[in-house]
Image 1 (cartoon, one colour):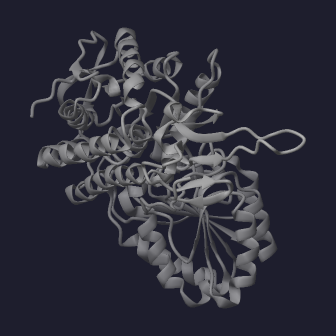
Image 2 (cartoon, helix red, strand yellow):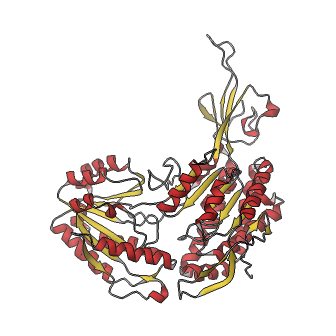
Image 3 (cartoon, one colour):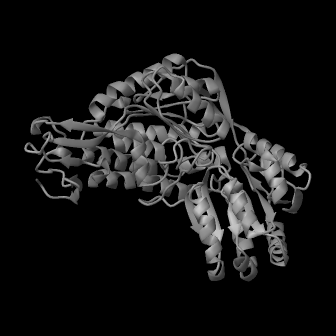
Length: 530
């Protein structure tokens, strides 16, 4: 399949006539064909206008029709075969086996949301029966349900070119909720974006869904993103990326005459706390697991553990020795693009220059800059330096972690209390450590969206119970997740219907419960008709 490099707007190639850019392969820094066109103002306006028109019909189609659309997208992505994987490999440097697994995750997400909306209870239907004889005032018939909010703009992420990109979790959950989607493809993998956008467009055409339900535009400048967020027909935004970019979009959305929500996942250190007995008995095991979690994907996971806290002493020294040996066995890895590699190198050098921050270990081989490579690093400091130096509290995207030595458990609690919002927080503890672990978790549950005991945070299950979010700056809305079935809740709002006759009610709120979903009737969960 040949690439054209143009925006795909409402089912058609759009002649944007904007400025152009090329993708570069991080594997060898060579430019990749074709030229890609930045979205013009006219392109963006057409995409949002078409999405608004599509919303009128798309929000009213049945759950089964929307589920079939998601299933069809999954099949079209699979039908791209090796073409998709090979282009993604060229644009990101990610190995084919990793991309094959990520494609499976992408398809699995689409099918998960198809099953969620087929079951239907996600819509949170509630019915309070009328009480005409109630004193001093009667109660009316009240019924509420979640409804889609309208066109959603999604920003693709660099580190997951399939699962957090054009047909990733934000797009899948928004389409499931009944919202049309406009994706701004990531400029580091625009060819991959185009291929997946073509698959979504084909699925919509096959099922006769309004073509405005999906558009994909390119943009390698901040102006394109700002124009999308500022457009008056955009109703919400999904973003995964840096704190700087996410905060800029958040601020722009809230400066509009009519502010809209931005669900941004941005920055997290994902702290790990090592308690004494676990450190004493499992030093080698924890060190190996930590090394794997730091280096998987060349450290380019939002859940990479960027900081480790532990009490100083002989057991910590044993652990550091094991970790040094483990890091010494690693090799350089190709990062997603030169911008990420350069930022990693600059941040690593800055941290290494801070007084009382020492280099514990680094991979023994020098990186090949022509292959956009970086090497794993481990730094060590004390708690006073960590508390004093604000730069140590900032995420570094890449294969690096910082070990912070504390003098006591009380100091560990103090360090935990001083953390900002995180996606994850982990404690390694044995049975003798459990009282102290409870103290830590009592603090950490106020700091993070996912808590782990005796594990590592990399690897985010796509499921019903998963919560991938956390207090600011990890995300802009800690009550919502970007991964798992509950992600659909971001794109809906509640509407209450008072004293409506049955023919005006959504099917989910009618007495007969024709869709068979679980509802709350007079405070009780039931699938029964009323």
